[in-house]
Length: 322
Length: 295
Image (cartoon, rainbow over all chains, first blue to last red; front, side, top):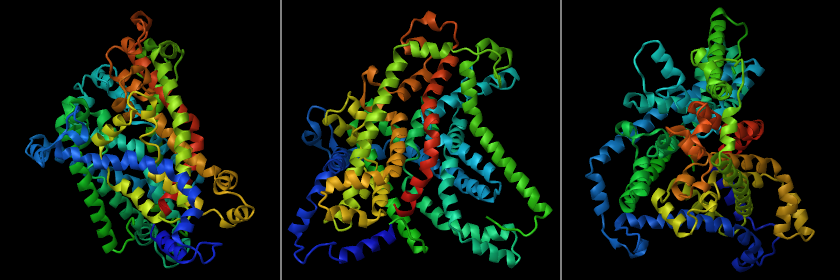
């Protein structure tokens, strides 16, 4: 993004191609009128379905009433926020959300890197191709389908593994409603679904490493591990930091798509995250203002985090994401 | 890729471990998919006889598929999903192109402000509730538009397309302009034919998203006949009574265990993805990388 911006500036500095000296703003706007027309549907989309909802966040400071609408409802200041922060649910939600995000960074981001590093070591082309083809396939399946697969293994009375445990005379396991199993279940299914895909970006970075570096290293007598330490790992550092920034920016999300589908009332203690709570309180209990206030809090923290992470990445000498 | 002059014994051991790990990882990826497929076509008696799992069934049964396709619910859900996948993807590509093409022109007045405003939506959003209220206020609830309009443009995809347009040779467009071609004409006649790879890539991105769409259904729709296949699938998986979920006579499903029917529904939801997978594979990496490098 950075190089592109510099390129932009240098192009803007030049007068537009095939234009005489009369490049007043008006004539430039006129020159591009069809372009503005083309953009209208897209810009309206962003305005209505992204910017209006941002404005709609005012209901976090109101007591939203269906009859009175967004503007007609009464202002309540920070009451909704006070209600949330003093609610016993709040520390639990924060804990579950942050823990899950943290676990995802460790148990789902590192495997992406490891898979890429292993694939990079595999020299038999057809084998590498087959492994890649198979492992990034599940990325395209929905979480519902993944839940269906999990169900086929762990459904209490019919799942393959559950019945196997029962037939062996071992303890009854009910993975789907067990508090201790819930987070590992999320992490393992995430690993199964997304690792192959997550490795792609690191493989691209690895492919971009100058091969002469390796040749020089061999001449210098560096073995496999020293090559990895001194050439391969530095080669993917930048991408890794970039992905880390993105993950940190989404730390308040914790993977709503997946969690909502796997969640059930018996595992709320460990599995209820901010988004699932907002969904329930807002859309099922119709407490719009409370739910919107939590959502607002989450968006602001997420925004601050991504700005902050980007700053830190730049300080550390990387390029950041903008 | 590390280079070695001569492989030592230790190197060969490491290689063996790596290849084995990869083979096991691949097998564990494939196994669940194979398992549900086999479960959906094996007579339950045979499954039970073999301790819950058969690798290759002796006899096949398509009863589960006959039941779900004979019910009113699943064909209707598939119809809805096909409509939103085809229609939604067309709208996505149309609006994304119309936005990305002008934004690929660096001299466009206001371009940077517009881009910044669009990228900002990736960093900050109104969140679930205000978005829901806007979708409702714009009259989309309980129409199929609710599954197509709220995600009309993916910012990520739009940026990928913009980058692609930027990398096209400018001379072609200049030549067309000199020949008196208008901007829209240039886009349709010159740019689009050159952009088939990116259209295919993003079409597949959008298409898969629509096929997998779930939340739109449960958030914006209450009419059961509008529910897409993923919502129906989830209800099927969780229900204790498959026959009532499928709205078929209970006697029809009595011979079949509910699990077989559930697994068959999972397979029906997987198959279209499997069918486009070779194309996805061909284009996806390329598209990902254009976006990742220059986003």
